[in-house]
Length: 134
Image 1 (tube, one colour):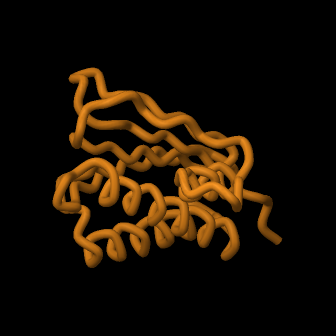
Image 2: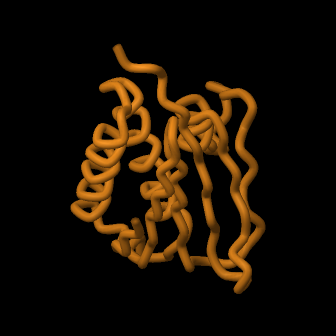
Image 3: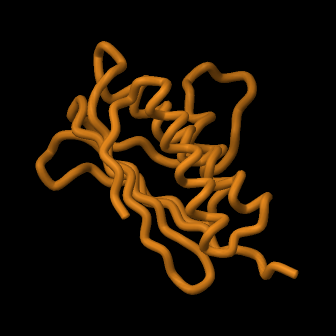
């Protein structure tokens, strides 16, 4: 499934809720679904803050469901530049950012950030394996 949205706050809320529902339908526990919802919200908020000068621009959220979890891809076509690195730890003393990516890395098992092939924008790929439900 693929969803094309803007980075307007209402669209971000909609995408978060949709991903929560998709995770639950695919068998995620309440906590795992909340993790996916929060990670998607953080990813789209990063697009809003960093990809577009006025904050609003297009984004794509794609979901690939598999047996024991899902992979979510968030793509933008914003400002060109080297994709950020996922921080391995969080420095509370620094104001250099990275908190959203750090949080995403704690919520999801796998996080990968790539520059789009066109040279514009970033693709964030994140995967979550669901815990076995009772």
